[in-house]
Image (cartoon, rainbow, N blue to C red; front, side, top):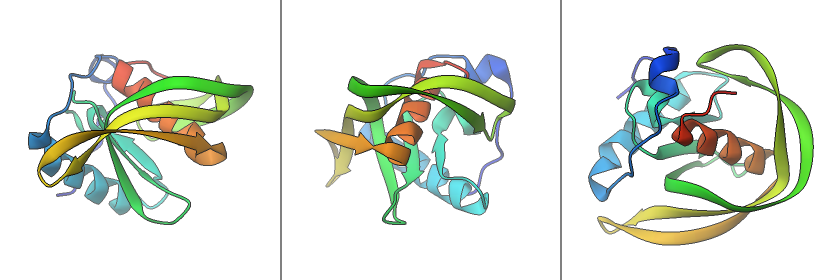
Length: 139
């Protein structure tokens, strides 16, 4: 279901609780909402008012991906970038890694399974942005 975006800094700056397998419907709401917002390429649950650690992004393969409880394990190649956010006005200078190793959970047959993945370039930047959202860190 498409949800309204939340721009309230009090909600966006609240660290998210761990997600569970019961948050599958939330993940679908995030995908629906992201795809309904033409320029959107990623979205975190707190951006629709739910403080759970669930994020979605549109990969370079043009598919929608869901990460439950994402955590940055390691980053290589820090670079200064300018980012914007759908739920925060203006642009902000940030440091993002060009390569990021991320641990996350994936929903498989109704259960969360731990995974790790290396993200590069644009996808690495998006995932780091979403991890910051889960921590309640505003760009």
